[in-house]
Image 1 (tube, rainbow, N blue to C red):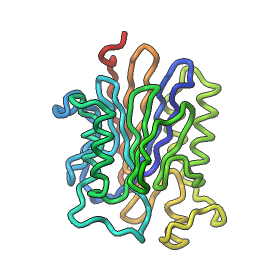
Image 2 (image 1 turned 90 degrees about the horizontal axis):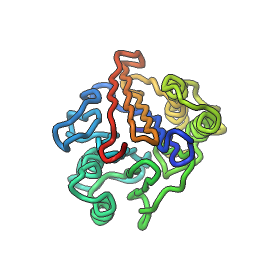
Image 3 (image 1 turned 90 degrees about the vertical axis):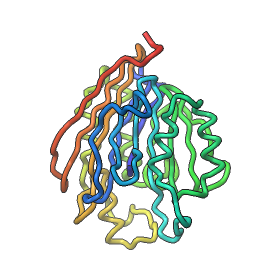
Length: 259
């Protein structure tokens, strides 16, 4: 997952709005979004190599999403665990979210670099193993996460935040198609605006759009989540092959414990 845009706690109808792109190698197998048997009630796609997921929502209202960190100068730890398991652990209702986050902080050095956001509508937390003591609650408003720390002003993050913030301020109700339009912007940014993450200018440019299309790698799926103040949730996923739309999965449900 390489871009997660979200607005929490501000919209009059939706306490949580999420729009996310997952960027991955095209040949890494994955299953589209569906309701899992374990953890029970989890709605998510599934990485068929590591067995975890990059983003999910449970029928009790828990949400989590993970991105990798682009730091080629930092080698992964020996026998690194799959980072997709972080999300499935956080979405296990048998353990409190706070306790799971604390456990994750204690074993963060077992994973390659990651960011994770997790919580429930109106209360999200952030944690990363890029720096110690990063576990914190996220303020209400519009935020963006790519392959650096939360709200790092990469151009794709800035543009996504601006577009989502404008939508959250002015539009009610929100049409999911408009969120997908934001995620589908494939225009690279000028070189003078690009970050220097150590991969070289050509690759920085290719990775700069919100929607990525490269040889062998790119945006594999897009996810939109809308949760309203009555606890009605919509989870919509669109999948792509080599940049071409191939299908959509849509799951709607009433969050348990909310009327």
